[in-house]
Image 1 (tube, rainbow, N blue to C red):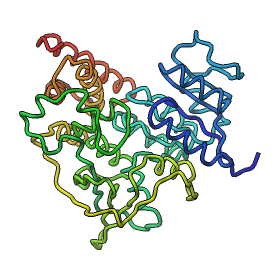
Image 2: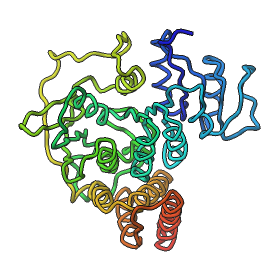
Image 3: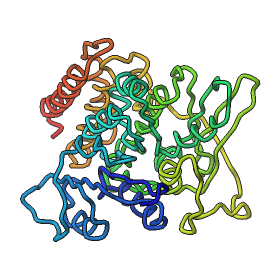
Image 4: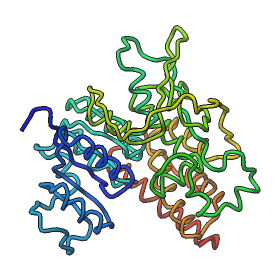
Length: 381
C-alpha cells in the first residue's frame, strides 16, 4: 500500500458529519482507505456503507442484525479508536458517546479528526493533557475551529484573541414572546448548515456557539475572556484570529462542512476536490456582523459561565442540554424551557474542581436525571 494512503475509521458514520466524511473519501479514493465504521441505530445505512467500503472493523448498537456479507471484526468504539492499523480516527458521534473513544484515541497517539463537541467540553483538561503526553494530534472538524487552526498555521507567536463567528440560527431577530412559541419543526430548519437534530437545536438556542467557546479554550489554550463571538449571517467568514500587533486573519469559504473535514483528513496537504463549491464573489452582496443577544439567547451565556467555572460545570451543562433538547423535540417542553432547565440544574450543582473521568461522568448522569425530575415535577412532560 502507498504511504500516501491514510487508513481511517469513522465513528458516527451514519450521521451528518460521518456521511460527509465518506463523501470526501469517495472524491479522493486514492488517498484514503476506510478500515473502521461505527454507527448507532441506522443499521440500514450502515449496511450499505459496509458493503461499499468493506471495513475491517465495525461497531453497531444492534449486534443481532446481520449487516452484510463482507467479513469484518466487531469491536467496541474504543477498540476501533485506538487500533494500531488506524492512522486517523474521525469522532463524529454525538453527545457524551464520543468522550470515551476520543480519550482512547489520544492515549494511543492517534490523529483525531474531532467533530464531537462534548469530548472537549466535558473533559478538555484530561484529553488535551493525554494528547500532549502521547503525541496525539487533535484535528478540529468544526468549521469555526478549523478556521482558527488554519489562521494560526505558520505563526510563530500566539494569538491574543479569537473571534468565533455564528450564523445566528433561524431566530436571531425573534423576541422572547416569539421564541416562547417556536416549534421543533421550525427549530430544525437551519438557514445555512445541514446538521443532525441535536446540533441544529443547539444552533437555534446558540448553545452550540457556547460549546465552541469552551472547545476553543482547550484546543488553542486561550482564556475564555479572550474569545469573543460575532453573529455573521452569511457564514462566509468562519472565524478570525487577532495578534498582538492588531492584525486579524480570517478564513473564508463557501459554507460546506466537507471542506474542514477534508482539511483535517489531508493535513498538512491541501488537495483539489471538484465536488467542493467555490465562492463566487460576484454573488456576495455584503458581509455583516452583530453582537449576540445574550438576554434573548441565555444558553450562550450559560455555556460561557460554565466554561469559566470549569471543573464539572461543563459536564453538567452538556448533560442537562442533551436531555432538555430531547424533551423539546418530543414536544414535552417549550423552546424557552431548554435554557430555563439548564440554568436551574447549573445553579443546584456543587462543582468539583479538576475532576477525574469518573467524577465527570457522575456529574453528567446527575444533570440528566435532574432535568427529567424538574420537567416531570413541573408537569412539563
